[in-house]
Amino acid sequence: MGECSGHSLMFKIPALRLRKLLLGFIILTLSSLISLYSMTYYSRDYETSTRSAIVMKKIFHQKFQLMKAREAERDHTHLHWNFTLETAHTPKAKSRPLLTTTTKSTTTTTIPPPRPPKLSGNINFNLTLESRLFFRDPGRKQQRNYTHLNLPSFITVEKDEPGTSQTQIVTTKMQPELGTTQSQVPMGLDETSNKGKSARTKTILFWYIPFDDKTVAAEFINEKWTTTPNEIIIDEPYCGRCKIIYDRKYIRKSDAIVFHAIQVQDDDLPNPMTRSAAQSYVWWLAESSSTTRDTAYTGLENYFNLTMTVRRSSDIHTPYSTFQWLLKMLWSKENGQDIIKTHAVMKNVYLTPTPDIEYIEDSLPEPNKKMSLPKGVAPEIRKVLEKKNRLVAWVVSNCANTVSSELRHNYAYQLVRSGLNVDQFGNCQGMAFPVESRFDPLFYETLGKYKFYFSFENSYHCKGYITEKLWFNALYSGAVPIVFGPHPRDVAAVLPPKSYIHAEDFGSASELATYIQYLDTNATAYAEYLHWRKWIRLLDENGNYRTTNRTAKILKSYSAEERKAVAKFLKPRPSGFCKLCKRLHEPLVSHVVDDVSEWWDSSERSECFDVDRARRMMKLPVVY
Image (cartoon, rainbow, N blue to C red; front, top):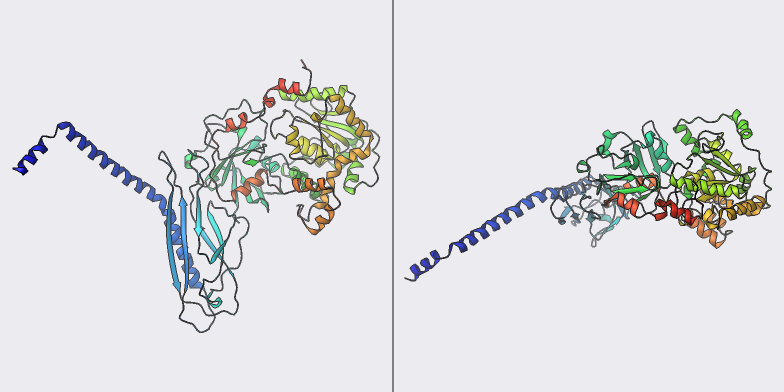
Protein backbone atom coordinates (compact mmCIF):
# COMPACT_ATOMS: atom_id res chain seq x y z
CA MET A 1 0.00 0.00 0.00
CA GLY A 2 2.82 2.33 0.88
CA GLU A 3 4.47 1.77 -2.50
CA CYS A 4 1.25 2.34 -4.40
CA SER A 5 0.47 5.55 -2.55
CA GLY A 6 4.04 6.75 -3.30
CA HIS A 7 3.59 6.23 -7.02
CA SER A 8 0.24 7.94 -6.85
CA LEU A 9 1.79 11.03 -5.30
CA MET A 10 4.46 11.11 -8.02
CA PHE A 11 1.88 11.13 -10.80
CA LYS A 12 -0.05 13.86 -9.05
CA ILE A 13 2.83 16.42 -9.42
CA PRO A 14 1.47 19.41 -11.35
CA ALA A 15 2.44 19.72 -15.01
CA LEU A 16 4.08 23.11 -14.36
CA ARG A 17 6.62 21.60 -11.94
CA LEU A 18 7.43 18.87 -14.45
CA ARG A 19 8.16 21.44 -17.12
CA LYS A 20 10.50 23.27 -14.74
CA LEU A 21 12.44 20.08 -14.08
CA LEU A 22 12.77 19.38 -17.81
CA LEU A 23 13.95 22.96 -18.48
CA GLY A 24 16.59 22.67 -15.75
CA PHE A 25 17.85 19.42 -17.22
CA ILE A 26 18.13 21.00 -20.69
CA ILE A 27 20.06 24.00 -19.32
CA LEU A 28 22.46 21.74 -17.43
CA THR A 29 23.08 19.69 -20.59
CA LEU A 30 23.76 22.80 -22.71
CA SER A 31 26.17 24.17 -20.09
CA SER A 32 28.13 20.93 -20.16
CA LEU A 33 28.33 21.01 -23.96
CA ILE A 34 29.54 24.62 -23.96
CA SER A 35 32.23 23.85 -21.38
CA LEU A 36 33.36 20.88 -23.43
CA TYR A 37 33.56 23.05 -26.59
CA SER A 38 35.55 25.73 -24.75
CA MET A 39 38.05 23.19 -23.50
CA THR A 40 38.42 21.83 -27.03
CA TYR A 41 38.83 25.37 -28.46
CA TYR A 42 41.52 26.47 -26.06
CA SER A 43 43.33 23.17 -26.11
CA ARG A 44 44.76 24.18 -29.48
CA ASP A 45 46.60 27.02 -27.80
CA TYR A 46 48.23 24.67 -25.33
CA GLU A 47 50.10 22.98 -28.15
CA THR A 48 52.73 25.72 -28.00
CA SER A 49 53.65 24.87 -24.42
CA THR A 50 53.69 21.12 -25.14
CA ARG A 51 55.81 21.51 -28.28
CA SER A 52 58.24 23.81 -26.41
CA ALA A 53 58.69 21.24 -23.65
CA ILE A 54 59.35 18.50 -26.22
CA VAL A 55 61.85 20.70 -28.08
CA MET A 56 63.69 21.48 -24.84
CA LYS A 57 63.80 17.85 -23.84
CA LYS A 58 65.27 16.89 -27.24
CA ILE A 59 67.84 19.66 -27.06
CA PHE A 60 69.02 18.60 -23.63
CA HIS A 61 69.14 14.98 -24.75
CA GLN A 62 71.13 15.78 -27.89
CA LYS A 63 73.55 18.01 -25.99
CA PHE A 64 74.39 15.30 -23.54
CA GLN A 65 74.74 12.68 -26.27
CA LEU A 66 77.34 14.83 -28.02
CA MET A 67 79.50 15.35 -24.94
CA LYS A 68 82.83 13.66 -25.24
CA ALA A 69 84.80 12.85 -22.13
CA ARG A 70 88.45 12.01 -21.81
CA GLU A 71 89.53 8.57 -20.85
CA ALA A 72 89.34 8.02 -17.12
CA GLU A 73 87.75 5.69 -14.70
CA ARG A 74 84.02 5.95 -14.26
CA ASP A 75 82.36 5.77 -10.92
CA HIS A 76 78.83 4.66 -10.17
CA THR A 77 77.36 8.04 -9.40
CA HIS A 78 74.95 9.64 -11.80
CA LEU A 79 74.38 13.27 -12.65
CA HIS A 80 70.80 14.56 -12.59
CA TRP A 81 69.75 17.57 -14.64
CA ASN A 82 66.27 18.86 -13.87
CA PHE A 83 64.45 21.58 -15.67
CA THR A 84 60.96 22.99 -15.42
CA LEU A 85 59.11 24.78 -18.19
CA GLU A 86 56.42 27.15 -17.01
CA THR A 87 54.49 29.08 -19.60
CA ALA A 88 52.05 31.83 -18.72
CA HIS A 89 50.04 31.99 -21.92
CA THR A 90 47.21 34.25 -23.07
CA PRO A 91 45.46 32.87 -26.16
CA LYS A 92 43.72 35.07 -28.67
CA ALA A 93 40.42 36.28 -27.28
CA LYS A 94 37.72 36.86 -29.86
CA SER A 95 34.33 37.54 -28.32
CA ARG A 96 35.09 35.35 -25.32
CA PRO A 97 36.46 36.64 -22.02
CA LEU A 98 40.25 36.76 -21.71
CA LEU A 99 41.53 33.39 -20.52
CA THR A 100 44.97 33.01 -18.93
CA THR A 101 46.28 29.50 -18.42
CA THR A 102 49.49 28.14 -16.95
CA THR A 103 50.94 24.78 -17.90
CA LYS A 104 53.87 23.22 -16.08
CA SER A 105 55.91 20.17 -16.88
CA THR A 106 59.04 18.78 -15.24
CA THR A 107 61.49 16.46 -16.98
CA THR A 108 64.41 14.66 -15.35
CA THR A 109 67.17 13.24 -17.51
CA THR A 110 69.67 10.90 -15.92
CA ILE A 111 72.95 10.25 -17.69
CA PRO A 112 76.18 8.54 -16.73
CA PRO A 113 78.86 10.97 -15.62
CA PRO A 114 81.54 11.83 -18.19
CA ARG A 115 85.20 11.06 -17.71
CA PRO A 116 86.91 13.55 -15.40
CA PRO A 117 88.34 16.55 -17.31
CA LYS A 118 91.54 18.35 -16.43
CA LEU A 119 89.90 21.78 -16.40
CA SER A 120 87.05 22.91 -14.21
CA GLY A 121 84.89 25.98 -13.85
CA ASN A 122 81.59 27.51 -14.87
CA ILE A 123 80.12 26.63 -18.25
CA ASN A 124 77.97 28.75 -20.53
CA PHE A 125 75.13 26.74 -21.99
CA ASN A 126 73.33 28.15 -25.08
CA LEU A 127 69.74 27.04 -25.41
CA THR A 128 67.48 28.09 -28.28
CA LEU A 129 63.79 27.90 -27.60
CA GLU A 130 61.43 28.53 -30.49
CA SER A 131 57.90 29.44 -29.55
CA ARG A 132 55.03 31.50 -30.82
CA LEU A 133 53.70 34.23 -28.56
CA PHE A 134 50.16 35.58 -28.78
CA PHE A 135 50.82 39.06 -27.45
CA ARG A 136 48.09 41.24 -28.86
CA ASP A 137 44.35 41.26 -28.35
CA PRO A 138 42.73 43.98 -30.54
CA GLY A 139 39.94 44.48 -28.04
CA ARG A 140 42.18 45.01 -25.03
CA LYS A 141 45.33 46.91 -24.16
CA GLN A 142 48.30 46.47 -21.85
CA GLN A 143 47.95 42.68 -21.70
CA ARG A 144 51.40 41.30 -20.91
CA ASN A 145 52.10 37.77 -22.13
CA TYR A 146 55.42 36.06 -21.91
CA THR A 147 57.23 32.76 -21.89
CA HIS A 148 59.19 32.20 -18.70
CA LEU A 149 61.85 29.54 -18.35
CA ASN A 150 62.08 28.43 -14.72
CA LEU A 151 65.38 26.57 -14.31
CA PRO A 152 66.73 24.83 -11.20
CA SER A 153 68.59 26.82 -8.58
CA PHE A 154 71.99 25.65 -9.80
CA ILE A 155 71.41 27.23 -13.23
CA THR A 156 71.76 31.00 -13.31
CA VAL A 157 70.11 32.71 -16.27
CA GLU A 158 72.03 35.65 -17.70
CA LYS A 159 69.11 37.74 -18.87
CA ASP A 160 69.33 38.77 -22.49
CA GLU A 161 67.35 41.20 -24.65
CA PRO A 162 66.30 38.80 -27.40
CA GLY A 163 63.87 39.31 -30.24
CA THR A 164 61.12 36.98 -29.12
CA SER A 165 59.00 37.24 -32.26
CA GLN A 166 60.70 34.18 -33.81
CA THR A 167 63.52 32.75 -31.76
CA GLN A 168 64.33 33.29 -28.10
CA ILE A 169 67.98 32.89 -27.09
CA VAL A 170 68.52 31.97 -23.45
CA THR A 171 72.08 31.77 -22.15
CA THR A 172 72.55 29.95 -18.89
CA LYS A 173 75.56 29.48 -16.69
CA MET A 174 75.61 25.95 -15.33
CA GLN A 175 77.16 24.95 -12.05
CA PRO A 176 77.19 21.49 -10.47
CA GLU A 177 74.32 20.41 -8.27
CA LEU A 178 75.01 19.90 -4.59
CA GLY A 179 76.54 16.49 -4.00
CA THR A 180 78.43 16.39 -7.28
CA THR A 181 82.06 17.16 -7.97
CA GLN A 182 83.65 19.43 -10.53
CA SER A 183 84.73 16.34 -12.44
CA GLN A 184 81.07 15.52 -13.08
CA VAL A 185 80.29 18.78 -14.83
CA PRO A 186 79.98 18.19 -18.58
CA MET A 187 82.69 19.84 -20.64
CA GLY A 188 82.74 20.96 -24.23
CA LEU A 189 79.68 23.20 -24.04
CA ASP A 190 79.73 26.48 -25.93
CA GLU A 191 81.33 29.17 -23.78
CA THR A 192 80.19 32.06 -25.97
CA SER A 193 77.69 34.36 -24.27
CA ASN A 194 75.03 36.04 -26.38
CA LYS A 195 74.86 39.31 -24.54
CA GLY A 196 72.97 42.28 -25.93
CA LYS A 197 70.30 42.12 -28.57
CA SER A 198 69.20 39.33 -30.84
CA ALA A 199 71.48 38.92 -33.85
CA ARG A 200 68.56 38.50 -36.24
CA THR A 201 67.92 41.42 -38.57
CA LYS A 202 64.51 42.95 -37.94
CA THR A 203 62.47 44.17 -40.91
CA ILE A 204 60.64 47.52 -40.97
CA LEU A 205 58.19 47.83 -43.85
CA PHE A 206 56.88 51.21 -45.01
CA TRP A 207 53.31 50.70 -46.21
CA TYR A 208 53.40 54.03 -48.04
CA ILE A 209 56.51 55.63 -49.53
CA PRO A 210 56.66 58.94 -47.61
CA PHE A 211 56.36 61.86 -50.03
CA ASP A 212 57.18 59.34 -52.79
CA ASP A 213 60.81 59.44 -51.60
CA LYS A 214 62.44 56.24 -50.32
CA THR A 215 65.28 58.21 -48.72
CA VAL A 216 63.15 60.18 -46.23
CA ALA A 217 63.37 57.53 -43.51
CA ALA A 218 67.15 57.99 -43.30
CA GLU A 219 66.59 61.57 -42.09
CA PHE A 220 64.85 60.25 -38.97
CA ILE A 221 67.22 57.46 -37.90
CA ASN A 222 69.46 59.82 -35.90
CA GLU A 223 72.32 57.35 -36.16
CA LYS A 224 74.62 56.09 -38.87
CA TRP A 225 73.19 53.88 -41.59
CA THR A 226 74.08 52.29 -44.91
CA THR A 227 71.99 51.83 -48.00
CA THR A 228 71.41 49.39 -50.84
CA PRO A 229 69.26 49.98 -53.96
CA ASN A 230 66.14 48.76 -52.13
CA GLU A 231 66.96 48.94 -48.42
CA ILE A 232 68.27 51.17 -45.67
CA ILE A 233 70.35 49.24 -43.14
CA ILE A 234 70.65 50.22 -39.49
CA ASP A 235 73.42 48.47 -37.61
CA GLU A 236 74.55 50.44 -34.57
CA PRO A 237 75.18 49.26 -30.98
CA TYR A 238 72.44 51.47 -29.54
CA CYS A 239 69.91 50.43 -32.19
CA GLY A 240 70.45 46.81 -33.10
CA ARG A 241 70.31 45.59 -36.69
CA CYS A 242 67.30 46.39 -38.88
CA LYS A 243 66.48 46.96 -42.52
CA ILE A 244 63.90 49.38 -43.91
CA ILE A 245 62.06 48.18 -47.01
CA TYR A 246 59.11 49.31 -49.16
CA ASP A 247 57.94 46.15 -50.93
CA ARG A 248 54.52 45.09 -49.63
CA LYS A 249 55.01 41.49 -50.68
CA TYR A 250 57.19 41.07 -47.56
CA ILE A 251 54.37 42.06 -45.21
CA ARG A 252 54.26 38.65 -43.50
CA LYS A 253 58.02 38.68 -42.90
CA SER A 254 58.08 42.19 -41.45
CA ASP A 255 58.41 42.86 -37.73
CA ALA A 256 56.89 46.35 -37.97
CA ILE A 257 54.75 48.11 -40.57
CA VAL A 258 55.05 51.90 -40.60
CA PHE A 259 52.13 54.00 -41.85
CA HIS A 260 52.90 57.60 -42.84
CA ALA A 261 49.93 59.29 -41.19
CA ILE A 262 49.22 61.96 -43.80
CA GLN A 263 49.06 59.29 -46.53
CA VAL A 264 46.76 56.85 -44.72
CA GLN A 265 43.74 55.76 -46.80
CA ASP A 266 40.95 53.69 -45.29
CA ASP A 267 40.65 51.49 -48.38
CA ASP A 268 44.37 50.80 -48.60
CA LEU A 269 45.30 49.23 -45.27
CA PRO A 270 46.23 45.66 -44.37
CA ASN A 271 43.69 43.54 -42.54
CA PRO A 272 44.77 43.43 -38.87
CA MET A 273 43.15 40.01 -38.40
CA THR A 274 45.67 38.44 -40.79
CA ARG A 275 48.80 39.94 -39.29
CA SER A 276 51.42 38.01 -37.39
CA ALA A 277 51.08 38.00 -33.63
CA ALA A 278 54.60 39.42 -33.36
CA GLN A 279 53.99 42.31 -35.77
CA SER A 280 53.53 45.96 -34.76
CA TYR A 281 51.56 48.60 -36.68
CA VAL A 282 53.26 51.99 -36.27
CA TRP A 283 51.59 55.40 -36.78
CA TRP A 284 54.35 57.78 -37.95
CA LEU A 285 54.05 61.55 -38.35
CA ALA A 286 56.72 64.25 -38.64
CA GLU A 287 54.33 67.22 -38.80
CA SER A 288 52.80 69.45 -36.13
CA SER A 289 49.27 69.16 -34.77
CA SER A 290 48.23 72.43 -36.40
CA THR A 291 49.18 71.10 -39.83
CA THR A 292 47.17 67.88 -39.48
CA ARG A 293 44.20 69.15 -37.48
CA ASP A 294 41.72 68.66 -40.32
CA THR A 295 42.93 65.09 -40.97
CA ALA A 296 40.60 62.50 -39.45
CA TYR A 297 41.60 58.93 -38.62
CA THR A 298 38.13 57.60 -37.89
CA GLY A 299 37.62 53.87 -38.03
CA LEU A 300 41.19 53.16 -36.93
CA GLU A 301 40.50 52.75 -33.24
CA ASN A 302 42.54 49.92 -31.72
CA TYR A 303 44.37 49.52 -35.03
CA PHE A 304 47.87 50.80 -34.26
CA ASN A 305 50.28 49.45 -31.68
CA LEU A 306 52.80 52.30 -31.51
CA THR A 307 52.86 56.06 -32.06
CA MET A 308 55.97 57.55 -33.63
CA THR A 309 55.98 61.36 -33.74
CA VAL A 310 57.96 64.47 -32.75
CA ARG A 311 56.31 64.48 -29.33
CA ARG A 312 58.32 63.14 -26.41
CA SER A 313 55.17 61.41 -25.14
CA SER A 314 55.09 59.14 -28.20
CA ASP A 315 55.91 55.47 -27.88
CA ILE A 316 58.82 56.11 -30.27
CA HIS A 317 60.06 59.69 -29.96
CA THR A 318 61.09 60.75 -33.48
CA PRO A 319 62.60 64.24 -33.53
CA TYR A 320 64.32 65.77 -36.54
CA SER A 321 67.56 65.32 -34.62
CA THR A 322 68.96 65.06 -31.12
CA PHE A 323 71.80 67.03 -29.57
CA GLN A 324 73.88 63.88 -29.26
CA TRP A 325 73.37 63.08 -32.97
CA LEU A 326 74.13 66.70 -33.94
CA LEU A 327 77.46 66.56 -32.14
CA LYS A 328 78.24 63.19 -33.71
CA MET A 329 77.57 64.65 -37.17
CA LEU A 330 80.00 67.50 -36.46
CA TRP A 331 82.57 65.00 -35.19
CA SER A 332 82.14 62.90 -38.33
CA LYS A 333 82.61 65.96 -40.52
CA GLU A 334 85.88 66.80 -38.76
CA ASN A 335 87.05 63.23 -39.31
CA GLY A 336 86.32 63.24 -43.04
CA GLN A 337 82.87 61.60 -42.97
CA ASP A 338 80.36 64.23 -44.06
CA ILE A 339 76.92 62.73 -43.31
CA ILE A 340 75.17 65.56 -45.18
CA LYS A 341 77.11 64.58 -48.29
CA THR A 342 76.12 60.95 -47.73
CA HIS A 343 72.47 62.03 -47.84
CA ALA A 344 73.17 64.00 -51.03
CA VAL A 345 74.69 60.99 -52.75
CA MET A 346 71.76 58.77 -51.72
CA LYS A 347 69.25 61.35 -52.97
CA ASN A 348 71.19 62.07 -56.20
CA VAL A 349 71.39 65.74 -55.29
CA TYR A 350 73.30 68.06 -57.59
CA LEU A 351 76.35 69.28 -55.68
CA THR A 352 77.74 72.72 -56.37
CA PRO A 353 81.01 72.37 -58.28
CA THR A 354 84.12 73.95 -56.79
CA PRO A 355 84.50 76.66 -59.47
CA ASP A 356 81.06 78.08 -58.53
CA ILE A 357 81.93 78.68 -54.87
CA GLU A 358 83.32 82.16 -55.59
CA TYR A 359 80.13 83.01 -57.46
CA ILE A 360 78.08 82.06 -54.39
CA GLU A 361 80.06 84.45 -52.21
CA ASP A 362 79.54 87.27 -54.74
CA SER A 363 75.78 86.61 -54.91
CA LEU A 364 75.29 87.22 -51.19
CA PRO A 365 74.60 90.70 -49.78
CA GLU A 366 77.58 92.85 -48.90
CA PRO A 367 79.43 91.46 -45.88
CA ASN A 368 79.97 93.26 -42.62
CA LYS A 369 83.43 93.61 -41.18
CA LYS A 370 84.85 90.37 -39.87
CA MET A 371 84.37 89.55 -36.21
CA SER A 372 87.36 90.16 -33.95
CA LEU A 373 88.41 86.96 -32.21
CA PRO A 374 88.46 86.98 -28.40
CA LYS A 375 91.63 85.81 -26.68
CA GLY A 376 91.89 82.28 -25.31
CA VAL A 377 89.01 80.94 -27.38
CA ALA A 378 88.93 77.16 -27.95
CA PRO A 379 90.05 75.90 -31.39
CA GLU A 380 86.59 74.41 -32.07
CA ILE A 381 85.03 77.84 -31.56
CA ARG A 382 87.77 79.82 -33.29
CA LYS A 383 87.25 77.85 -36.48
CA VAL A 384 83.57 78.89 -36.51
CA LEU A 385 84.18 82.53 -35.61
CA GLU A 386 86.71 83.03 -38.39
CA LYS A 387 83.98 82.55 -41.02
CA LYS A 388 81.57 85.17 -39.63
CA ASN A 389 81.11 88.26 -41.78
CA ARG A 390 77.31 88.73 -41.86
CA LEU A 391 74.59 89.22 -39.25
CA VAL A 392 71.22 87.40 -39.69
CA ALA A 393 69.97 84.97 -42.36
CA TRP A 394 66.51 83.54 -42.93
CA VAL A 395 65.61 81.02 -45.64
CA VAL A 396 61.82 80.74 -45.89
CA SER A 397 59.38 79.60 -48.57
CA ASN A 398 56.05 79.21 -46.73
CA CYS A 399 54.88 82.77 -47.18
CA ALA A 400 52.15 83.00 -44.54
CA ASN A 401 50.12 80.42 -46.47
CA THR A 402 48.93 79.00 -43.15
CA VAL A 403 47.58 80.87 -40.15
CA SER A 404 50.48 79.77 -37.94
CA SER A 405 53.03 80.74 -40.58
CA GLU A 406 51.59 84.24 -40.65
CA LEU A 407 52.66 84.71 -37.04
CA ARG A 408 56.35 84.20 -37.75
CA HIS A 409 56.29 86.65 -40.66
CA ASN A 410 54.59 89.15 -38.41
CA TYR A 411 57.27 88.74 -35.73
CA ALA A 412 60.12 88.95 -38.26
CA TYR A 413 58.60 92.18 -39.58
CA GLN A 414 58.62 93.61 -36.05
CA LEU A 415 62.33 92.79 -35.71
CA VAL A 416 63.17 94.49 -39.02
CA ARG A 417 61.14 97.55 -38.00
CA SER A 418 63.27 97.69 -34.83
CA GLY A 419 66.38 98.20 -36.96
CA LEU A 420 67.67 94.63 -37.30
CA ASN A 421 69.43 93.88 -40.59
CA VAL A 422 68.13 90.54 -41.96
CA ASP A 423 69.13 88.81 -45.21
CA GLN A 424 65.96 86.99 -46.26
CA PHE A 425 66.11 84.22 -48.87
CA GLY A 426 63.41 82.13 -50.52
CA ASN A 427 60.10 82.73 -52.23
CA CYS A 428 58.75 85.24 -49.72
CA GLN A 429 59.88 88.63 -51.06
CA GLY A 430 63.49 87.61 -50.64
CA MET A 431 66.40 86.80 -52.92
CA ALA A 432 67.07 83.27 -54.13
CA PHE A 433 69.47 81.36 -51.96
CA PRO A 434 72.57 80.61 -54.03
CA VAL A 435 72.68 76.89 -53.07
CA GLU A 436 69.69 74.92 -54.29
CA SER A 437 69.48 71.94 -51.93
CA ARG A 438 69.79 71.73 -48.16
CA PHE A 439 71.53 68.40 -48.72
CA ASP A 440 74.41 70.15 -50.45
CA PRO A 441 77.17 70.64 -47.84
CA LEU A 442 77.77 74.10 -49.33
CA PHE A 443 74.28 75.10 -48.15
CA TYR A 444 75.47 74.98 -44.54
CA GLU A 445 78.88 76.44 -45.32
CA THR A 446 77.10 79.48 -46.72
CA LEU A 447 74.79 79.86 -43.72
CA GLY A 448 77.86 79.49 -41.49
CA LYS A 449 79.00 82.94 -42.62
CA TYR A 450 76.12 84.43 -40.60
CA LYS A 451 76.20 85.00 -36.84
CA PHE A 452 72.49 84.29 -36.38
CA TYR A 453 69.74 82.36 -38.12
CA PHE A 454 65.96 82.74 -37.75
CA SER A 455 64.74 79.29 -36.70
CA PHE A 456 61.09 80.32 -37.05
CA GLU A 457 58.64 77.38 -37.23
CA ASN A 458 55.31 77.51 -39.07
CA SER A 459 53.46 76.51 -35.89
CA TYR A 460 53.19 77.96 -32.41
CA HIS A 461 53.68 75.93 -29.21
CA CYS A 462 52.78 72.65 -30.94
CA LYS A 463 54.34 69.96 -28.77
CA GLY A 464 57.78 68.78 -29.80
CA TYR A 465 57.73 70.40 -33.25
CA ILE A 466 61.35 71.48 -33.76
CA THR A 467 62.64 70.96 -37.29
CA GLU A 468 65.81 71.21 -39.37
CA LYS A 469 65.52 75.01 -39.18
CA LEU A 470 67.06 74.83 -35.72
CA TRP A 471 69.09 71.61 -35.83
CA PHE A 472 70.84 72.04 -39.17
CA ASN A 473 70.22 75.48 -40.70
CA ALA A 474 71.43 77.07 -37.47
CA LEU A 475 73.33 74.76 -35.08
CA TYR A 476 75.02 72.51 -37.63
CA SER A 477 76.04 75.42 -39.86
CA GLY A 478 77.53 77.36 -36.92
CA ALA A 479 74.94 80.14 -36.64
CA VAL A 480 73.26 80.92 -33.31
CA PRO A 481 69.53 80.11 -33.64
CA ILE A 482 66.89 82.74 -32.85
CA VAL A 483 63.95 80.49 -31.94
CA PHE A 484 60.30 81.36 -32.55
CA GLY A 485 57.36 78.93 -32.45
CA PRO A 486 58.39 76.00 -30.22
CA HIS A 487 57.48 76.27 -26.57
CA PRO A 488 60.46 77.33 -24.39
CA ARG A 489 60.12 74.15 -22.31
CA ASP A 490 60.30 71.97 -25.43
CA VAL A 491 63.52 73.64 -26.56
CA ALA A 492 65.11 73.52 -23.10
CA ALA A 493 64.40 69.79 -22.97
CA VAL A 494 66.55 69.05 -26.04
CA LEU A 495 69.25 71.77 -26.08
CA PRO A 496 71.74 72.88 -23.41
CA PRO A 497 71.60 76.44 -22.06
CA LYS A 498 73.49 79.13 -23.96
CA SER A 499 73.19 77.33 -27.28
CA TYR A 500 70.19 79.31 -28.61
CA ILE A 501 68.19 82.49 -28.06
CA HIS A 502 64.42 82.16 -27.58
CA ALA A 503 62.20 85.03 -28.66
CA GLU A 504 59.87 84.53 -25.69
CA ASP A 505 62.66 85.35 -23.25
CA PHE A 506 62.26 89.00 -24.28
CA GLY A 507 59.36 91.33 -23.61
CA SER A 508 59.10 92.50 -27.21
CA ALA A 509 60.65 92.15 -30.65
CA SER A 510 62.40 95.46 -30.07
CA GLU A 511 64.19 94.10 -26.97
CA LEU A 512 65.36 91.04 -28.90
CA ALA A 513 66.65 93.18 -31.77
CA THR A 514 68.65 95.30 -29.32
CA TYR A 515 70.21 92.20 -27.74
CA ILE A 516 71.21 90.76 -31.13
CA GLN A 517 72.88 94.04 -32.03
CA TYR A 518 74.75 93.97 -28.71
CA LEU A 519 76.11 90.46 -29.44
CA ASP A 520 77.16 91.63 -32.88
CA THR A 521 79.60 94.06 -31.29
CA ASN A 522 80.74 91.87 -28.37
CA ALA A 523 82.71 88.87 -29.60
CA THR A 524 83.25 87.44 -26.11
CA ALA A 525 79.54 87.44 -25.28
CA TYR A 526 78.69 86.00 -28.69
CA ALA A 527 81.26 83.21 -28.35
CA GLU A 528 79.48 81.95 -25.22
CA TYR A 529 76.66 80.70 -27.49
CA LEU A 530 79.18 78.47 -29.29
CA HIS A 531 80.77 77.07 -26.13
CA TRP A 532 78.91 73.76 -26.53
CA ARG A 533 80.96 72.97 -29.64
CA LYS A 534 83.93 72.18 -27.35
CA TRP A 535 82.07 69.06 -26.25
CA ILE A 536 83.14 67.38 -29.50
CA ARG A 537 86.44 66.55 -27.80
CA LEU A 538 84.49 64.37 -25.32
CA LEU A 539 83.52 61.90 -28.06
CA ASP A 540 85.45 58.68 -28.55
CA GLU A 541 86.92 57.17 -31.70
CA ASN A 542 83.41 56.19 -32.86
CA GLY A 543 81.82 59.56 -32.18
CA ASN A 544 80.04 58.39 -29.02
CA TYR A 545 80.20 59.81 -25.52
CA ARG A 546 81.52 57.45 -22.86
CA THR A 547 82.86 58.08 -19.38
CA THR A 548 86.55 57.25 -19.52
CA ASN A 549 89.72 58.47 -17.84
CA ARG A 550 90.25 60.82 -20.75
CA THR A 551 86.78 62.38 -20.56
CA ALA A 552 86.95 62.57 -16.74
CA LYS A 553 90.14 64.58 -17.04
CA ILE A 554 88.50 67.00 -19.51
CA LEU A 555 85.37 67.38 -17.40
CA LYS A 556 87.43 68.47 -14.39
CA SER A 557 87.96 71.82 -16.11
CA TYR A 558 84.19 72.28 -16.58
CA SER A 559 81.89 73.90 -14.06
CA ALA A 560 79.46 71.75 -12.09
CA GLU A 561 76.57 73.14 -14.15
CA GLU A 562 78.30 72.30 -17.41
CA ARG A 563 79.15 68.77 -16.26
CA LYS A 564 75.50 68.26 -15.44
CA ALA A 565 74.52 69.48 -18.92
CA VAL A 566 77.04 67.13 -20.54
CA ALA A 567 75.62 64.15 -18.66
CA LYS A 568 72.08 65.10 -19.69
CA PHE A 569 72.49 65.98 -23.36
CA LEU A 570 75.29 63.63 -24.44
CA LYS A 571 73.82 60.52 -22.89
CA PRO A 572 72.95 58.16 -25.76
CA ARG A 573 69.18 58.15 -26.19
CA PRO A 574 68.02 56.20 -29.24
CA SER A 575 65.26 57.98 -31.14
CA GLY A 576 63.45 57.71 -34.44
CA PHE A 577 63.94 54.54 -36.44
CA CYS A 578 66.98 53.70 -34.34
CA LYS A 579 64.70 53.48 -31.30
CA LEU A 580 62.07 51.53 -33.24
CA CYS A 581 64.77 49.05 -34.24
CA LYS A 582 65.91 48.77 -30.63
CA ARG A 583 62.34 48.13 -29.49
CA LEU A 584 61.87 45.36 -32.05
CA HIS A 585 64.86 43.57 -30.51
CA GLU A 586 63.35 43.74 -27.02
CA PRO A 587 60.79 41.33 -25.52
CA LEU A 588 57.34 41.95 -26.94
CA VAL A 589 54.86 43.85 -24.81
CA SER A 590 51.27 44.15 -25.95
CA HIS A 591 50.13 47.71 -26.55
CA VAL A 592 47.22 49.10 -28.55
CA VAL A 593 46.44 52.76 -29.26
CA ASP A 594 42.76 53.21 -28.47
CA ASP A 595 42.13 56.28 -30.65
CA VAL A 596 45.09 57.89 -32.39
CA SER A 597 43.11 61.03 -33.35
CA GLU A 598 42.00 61.57 -29.78
CA TRP A 599 45.55 61.13 -28.48
CA TRP A 600 47.05 63.44 -31.11
CA ASP A 601 44.59 66.35 -30.84
CA SER A 602 43.21 66.33 -27.30
CA SER A 603 46.57 66.53 -25.53
CA GLU A 604 47.80 69.51 -27.56
CA ARG A 605 48.22 73.05 -26.22
CA SER A 606 45.32 75.32 -27.07
CA GLU A 607 47.47 78.04 -28.68
CA CYS A 608 48.72 75.47 -31.20
CA PHE A 609 45.24 75.67 -32.77
CA ASP A 610 44.13 79.15 -31.63
CA VAL A 611 46.12 81.73 -33.59
CA ASP A 612 44.40 84.68 -31.88
CA ARG A 613 45.52 83.40 -28.48
CA ALA A 614 49.03 82.90 -29.83
CA ARG A 615 49.09 86.45 -31.21
CA ARG A 616 48.02 87.86 -27.84
CA MET A 617 50.71 85.83 -26.06
CA MET A 618 53.41 87.27 -28.34
CA LYS A 619 51.87 90.77 -28.24
CA LEU A 620 51.74 90.90 -32.01
CA PRO A 621 49.47 93.28 -33.92
CA VAL A 622 46.80 91.97 -36.26
CA VAL A 623 47.95 92.15 -39.89
CA TYR A 624 45.29 92.36 -42.62
